Amino acid sequence: MTLGILGAGQAGSTLARAAVAAGYDVVIANSRAPGTLADLVHALGPRARAAWAPDAAAAADFAFLAFPYRPEHTLPAAELAGKVVLDNNNYMPRRDGIFPAVVSGEKTVHELRQEQLPGARLAKAFSHIQFHGRVPVRVAADALPALVRLARPAGAPDRTALVVSSDHPEAVALVARFYDALGFDTVDSSPLSESWRSAPGTPMWEQSFDGQTRKELERNLQLAARPTG
Ligand SMILES: NC(=O)c1ccc[n+]([C@@H]2O[C@H](COP(=O)([O-])OP(=O)(O)OC[C@H]3O[C@@H](n4cnc5c(N)ncnc54)[C@H](OP(=O)(O)O)[C@@H]3O)[C@@H](O)[C@H]2O)c1
Image (cartoon, rainbow, N blue to C red):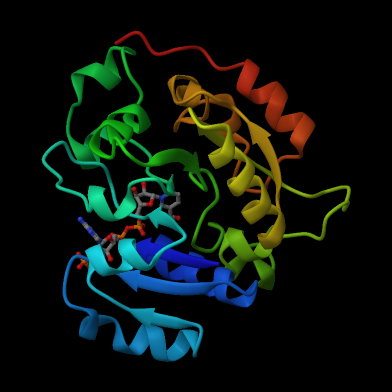
């Protein structure tokens, strides 16, 4: 399977490392030319290459968007049509500005992104796992990205579960397989209109830094109260 990663900052580059380690091929892009990612792809090894964003989208069996949603974005919609596209964005008004439909609770930011990619099967995924170390650091392992620090083999009693939300069951199934390959259980919080339950500030969000089991995550999702603007 080839994972196309659009966005090569903290989230995209860290997911690329984990995916390569789990046996996936990776084509990664940022908003600039592929040559700007030469050091990263060299460090990732022969399973990875850099590309322009539309070429990474075209080469992907499934894709990961690792940059914030913006209303004015023109994404490679034709290249992503028919594919499962993972969106790990978290809406942060101080960073992104005010999106009235999201603030009022009319839509989630992931539904807005699905509208930008009408032919793709969008899934909110990886949004509450940190791609950086724990703050504050308590023990040496805390310096690792949570994506690495919290990964466990299937069946481990303390295995962390991650949320997926999608309007497409086959996207949920693909994300669950990918989570499992990277060391995580899955909690399905579909459809996309329910994805506000795992937004920043919700009960599950407050518990996400050191991981939560499937049961804990399911309970915390139910405790969420919808923002009403
Ligand atoms: N960091 C985390 O731990 C974490 C955890 C959960 C969720 N997230 C979410 O992940 C997303 C990315 O966060 P980050 O911390 O990785 O940000 P970041 O370090 O600022 O990286 C953003 C990357 O996206 C690229 N980019 C921007 N617009 C693009 C476009 N239209 N096409 C292709 N690439 C584009 C940037 O390219 P250039 O360098 O060329 O500008 C950069 O490589 C955010 O939505 C955030 O909410 C992050």
